[in-house]
Image (cartoon, rainbow, N blue to C red; front, top):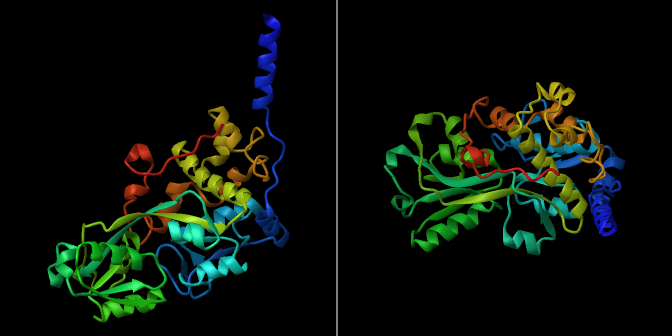
Length: 342
């Protein structure tokens, strides 16, 4: 009886043994050979997510994720080249190879997933679509804006969301679209449109930067919640694995109280085997992806955890002071959760 038990245990041990170092896939190899990650920016500034200053320096929520991915693959947040593209240009830019990845508040939709040759990673941001309008109009619901002119970003999923929502309720409206955020906001402030439809964070930033912020109101009515995901070219599953676990690492670090400030201390005294593996003290977290085992440590050291990124770009540490809402971790009432690190 002992022999079959030992054989079974040996077989089980083999299934649990660490895998050999994985092939990182063609995209990661290309990034490594080039020495830089080509990541999407914006053709101007998309407030809170991709902003560029007069010196050409980029910042924002999406830019931080670009830096995190560059750090995961290349070991440095400076190894990212931000390529300015509009929302309409982002998909052709990825398909043509002008960028390696789209990190640009991109909604994961069925048509994009099945028709554009794209592959999406797990959502990294939950975007509510809301309405910003002039307070003087006295609107309390979207129905009160019957016949109004809506400003919308051209080439974005907001066009479809508004059309679906208004059509289902028989509410007529006129759409005025713009490629650049600066043009859209200028039209809104100048009175060319009555309403700006868009993601809640963008609307809050737009209201904050208005000449008279108190003249504007964001309606409580939510048109939809949209999962914002990172997109890569179809067929490179290894690259999607790297992206998924990069996002998960930022969430895992927050959940376990690992910050940019204390990551060295935690690494010196890891509280659990999973944290030990996560920070590269013991092997496995990198070799399964074709990366160095300390890649997640490098990411947290460079950009911090998810909460730190959120707070300094769009949250309380930013000019926009946006509540996290559904972008909190699940046990705080949000929709974000960590994958199992085994």
